[in-house]
Length: 150
Image 1 (tube, helix red, strand yellow):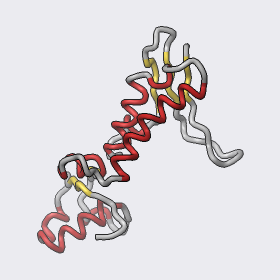
Image 2 (image 1 turned 90 degrees about the vertical axis):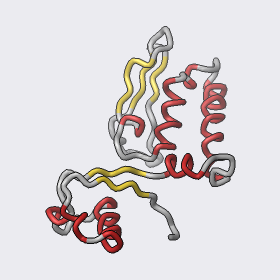
Image 3 (image 1 turned 30 degrees about the vertical axis):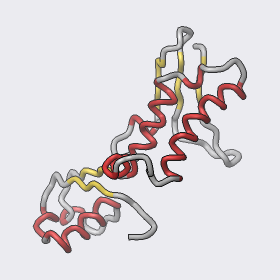
């Protein structure tokens, strides 16, 4: 392989979940495991950022580690600017799509008992407005944004 990306832990002797990306000698992304872009329910902004970084081969640009980090950092800075400016140059719908999560529940909220999860909390709060019948639906999907302030 030409390049393998393995994220490091910020704490000594702490194991990370299996995460890695492998690029072949011709620059193709041959394996990708454990990153958010492969998971359902993750923030779209993180998925798009990782798709850009990995699928467009930013880890292959540059001849030194510093050059590679600079290329990848340009992409990270662009997405950080979207957050920092609160999406000032974007439509509201685009910003909501980037920072929201979709959670689907296989059981109804009532069948979940005392479990705690963001989707269950969201469904219970929606039921206060829309009525308790939504708590009985088995394939309920909650589209939510987690924020510090309402």
